[in-house]
Image (cartoon, rainbow over all chains, first blue to last red; front, side, top):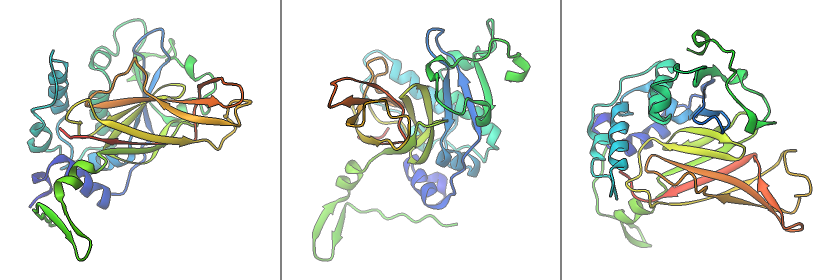
Length: 153
Length: 141
């Protein structure tokens, strides 16, 4: 059998045993509400290894379909979990492609779809060295309003 | 590379009896994460987690790679602190994992607060800790 013929959870089990975790230096900072501090998305090293290996993760649209199902009034449990398991998995991704995929998977779509609309970018991809190195004033972290959108992109 | 598959309804030990594979499947943790909140939040090791979203002091969302089947899963965890960030006067603290009402569990993610409670003062509050370990049990999508 080929790896893609297994269910997603079994593919993750295989990856845990066989792939070396990849600790990415990329972080995604985003703002969802002006009254809340900036949020920081941190890629998981085991997940990143799966993304870069290929043949494990489903296409990101699968997660969007499941999200739609969950938002349906009266939702009790998923009935289309087969989409995770039976959809042709993604081919190997570069680290940058994996971050783009992760943004679309784990950041609310109203943020990444309109990240550059408004007075300042709502989302910035950066390296972890560009973040404050201590958590002092963590609840006051904001995206710099002077950042230009080309830098943010 | 070959990927083997064994299909069985039961697993039998040579002397200790038999257990249905469904017990193993249902009883295994479906996701776990060992992470820290010092400096930049990051996982030290994990399973079935695609990312952590650091929301604010002490609060983090764990995003699943394989969604849970429903939002009624069980969670457990613990934490410890070995850094100078321990709140003053809280040497007798105990740590508490708290599910914020503003972020109810979803099939795709789960959000948790780390808090401390002081035995002496009766006070408490949110704080970042050096080790948090969580596990999720339930049905997968």
